[in-house]
Length: 400
Image (cartoon, rainbow, N blue to C red; front, side, top):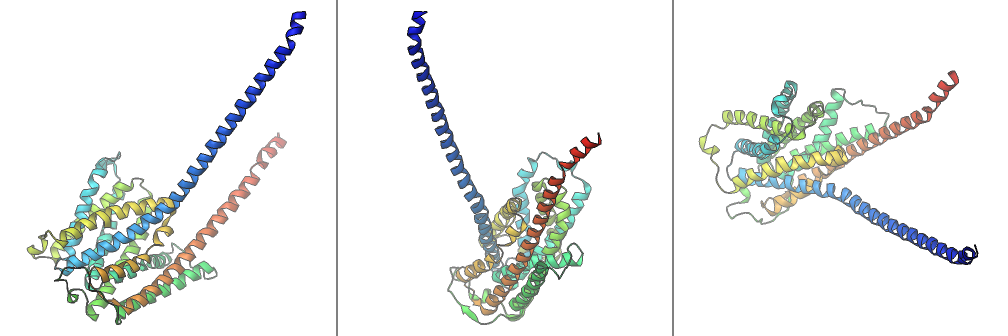
């Protein structure tokens, strides 16, 4: 007993040492957890920055590649290449590029419903007509006009949605008034681009080969107007494509299968039409120069890359984010055609493009405001439902 009493201070001191050691270990673990949380926070901040920046970079790249494809195709068609042959070969090559991805899909083609194939065939018919009109319009006018007229696609989509009563036209809402005003302004700007060519305000010698003279590119006023109307009709068909494709695409999850069959049907339909229109066998012979480059660029960047980026950005940020970058293509096209094709930048294209872009962004503002109101209404409905939900068990308990 005396020995135990004698050892008590030693035991107490040992216990104090163990407690202090335990507290020190706990503080060390807490510091380690704080370092891990700080590293996770930094990783999240970097991820958020990339999550915001990467779609922007992707869409800007798409605008550059789209304008590049139209510029190279304009150069090839100015060398004598048929626009019909260009559309057929570029889509056929794009289908070949997508074929391995389609084969590796888990869902085989035999299991595709007939209604989906019929819908994709209809989409292909609309898309092939739009492509033929677009490249003929570029051949008669300019890639700058093509980029300016591309801003009409969401405008025409809104008009068709109102005509077919997919969207209600309520003039009491400021968003609807903004969309209607944007439609009128954009169409007015498009008419200026088509009907008023104006004087040349910027000229450049260009980086094209010596036999690429301005007479190959600068269209007469009649060709300019005709090409502009062809591009406007192409945008109208593209807007129709947007209306038709929504119920078809949303009912089938495999986007690669949809894109492959769409391009496959476009290739078949453009081939049939082009064989009827283009009967000269020499027109179907490709030369290993700018013609081959234009077809490969159109297949890789105009079809495969562009479709993949659009699908990804639609999933990440929605359709409004994708359409916001379209006016950027006008400035890119103006620079490319002046530098690489040696065209002159005309006053009518500049004025009309600016007016069209103003109307375009007014339309986008109206859509953003409508979506914001819809999201706020949804949040309020969910909040009210959450507040009412706990009352149900109480009432049941009282009844019992």
